[in-house]
Amino acid sequence: MSQPRDYRLVDGTVIDHLPVGTAARALELLGLPREGPITVGINVPSPSHGRKDIVRVEGLFLGKRELDRLALLGPNITVSIVREGAIGEKTVLSVPTRLVAILDCRNPTCITGSEAVDSVFVRMGEFPYSYKCTYCQRVTRDDER
Image 1: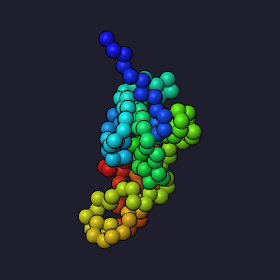
Image 2: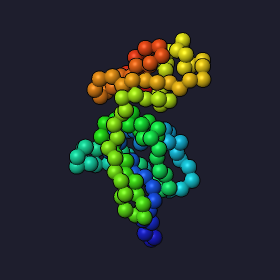
Image 3: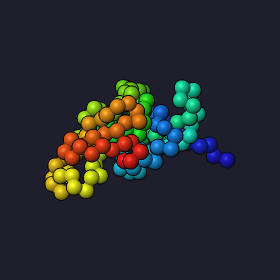
Image 4: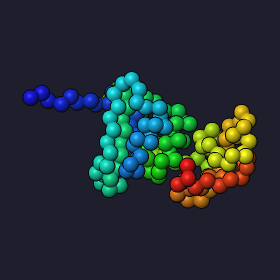
């Protein structure tokens, strides 16, 4: 019987401490799957969080907009950049107070639905957050996105 291959991440990104059940949404937000290895762990035991999801993607390095989108999935998500097999940097994500071109306004009369303008939302309160559209003032809760 052959041994399973060891797919250690050489150069890429680890998205860790995702709330259970959000790994598929994280893949969707990042436009994955794509070429290259992707490892997904769902409902994995975690000493600090009880249970978690985790995503490892070879050759993927995220920009600010992608990190901001991932932060919307829940608190305490960490993103580690791996270079040459070692963690180069580790970031705990937080939802920015101002989100530009990250969320879509659900108000059918909002200008963002008919004009070529980026949506702009302001984060309100504590987690779970609400977000206010700066154009039409509609408030959207986390569970409505």
